[in-house]
Image (cartoon, rainbow, N blue to C red):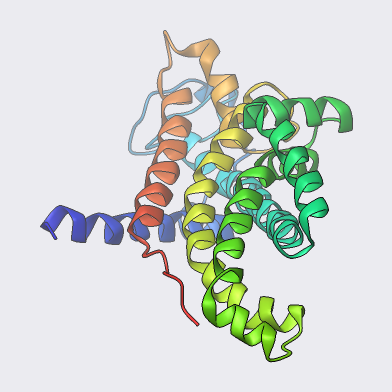
Length: 268
């Protein structure tokens, strides 16, 4: 393994650790409030007083980026957790519920897969309304088919294996088979997919907030900050650049970390 391959996951973990601190305790990283305005200091470039500059209302961009980690990461992690939970349930029911159950559930997932995830999330938000919670649910629902199909495929492979057939012949009940044999073998691939999928969820959440469907102003959220900053790209590039870099750093880090995780092979 090359030095880059060994150090990349460590660097990614450190970046995510910094953003975790920003989400949990932003006061440890910045002292200024994200909503403190100073019209006199509006659109000032990066400096010692304001390392990331200020926005059109004189708010400190660094403070808003740091505080924005809480909402942006909450949407990404919450949507992924919802998608994993529902996808795990659907996948297990399809694999263990018989042929008819498998056909019905998987055809429903095929219909959802016909839509790009972001478009499907946009449709859900259009139906249920805007807001942080609705965006989280919409992104989670849109990602369910990906996890459901993975769980179903892994579960079927395990359930058709010799040791599971032997356990069934010895009278082990299906719920016990799922707990003892199926779930341990599904956990590894599911963890890898969920880690990478968190980055996709962060992008989708930021995209929906960029369109004005996420957190309401003046809440600090990276996608909303991008939307506000695009009006000043020609004269104040920093208002959109630093929120964009924050999104990129999280997505790249979770992708690198996810790809470095070992998927578990089938085991008894």
